[in-house]
Image (cartoon, rainbow, N blue to C red; front, side, top):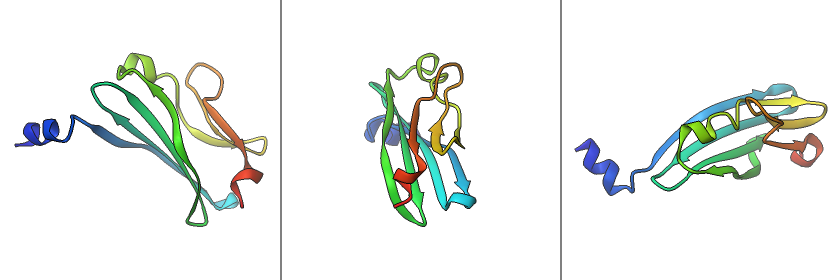
Length: 102
């Protein structure tokens, strides 16, 4: 039944990749992954005191781990910015903290 349900629901594979709490800044950042037969997407949700201040897809690629696996690694705060880091290259996404703390 598990495989049948997976196929019935469009063969979607979704998981929580990372959740980071930055208590000093009142922020929680969550990276959620979703993969179908056609696309892999990485969604970032940032909450400031339980209010979503940013939510969106920050990466879409073909659904191949070799393609997407190196493009993101962690979420950190550095130089006044919230940053989604990449494993090899420059940061995948960043936004000044002042824009997130409304």
